[in-house]
Image (cartoon, rainbow, N blue to C red; front, side, top):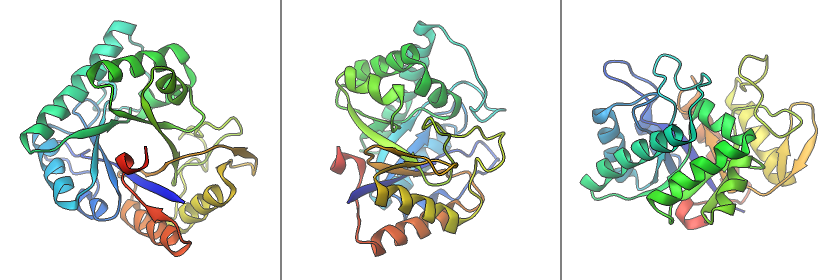
Length: 254
């Protein structure tokens, strides 16, 4: 199987440091770079792009609600026009920063509550997909497998990369288990690897209950803000390679 590993990066802000981007960029094939609304700032964005260029990974914009204190994980209700503007503003900012370094943004992945809400809200998903297409119809939308967001992107004619999560548990309807529930976040690198291999080998989402939902997917996410992010990304990469799978960037897959 050809598969992509991605991570959410560039999530430091000013003097506040989040994660080890340099180490993760030596492991993953694609980076989702925060655009300043939930995390990141212009200098962090520029530095993350520089590191991504040196590592040779593909670059995506990681837009979110304007929620620095809540790390973009709190629900925010926006009108259709405001949501489209918020996405456009953030993706455009990263595109400008990337162009200044001779790089090209190739995908978009919404963050946190914006992503979770769009997975279940068809109208919101369609608004995000329309915003991405209006910016550049060649952009890939990285969206959770089986989600309304992935469906809306396909309806809009965008290229879609379906995603599953290495470090998160699933409910029986194929959505991520809320972080407030026990067991929602997998606490060890080995548990993450076992979770990934089950999904890859069976060809779909394996839920926390043991239920199985068949689906195709292109990419596996490791959250860059977890305490064991680097170890987990390395263990998952090594486990996939040992099992005979091939790691690719998103543009190589979609």
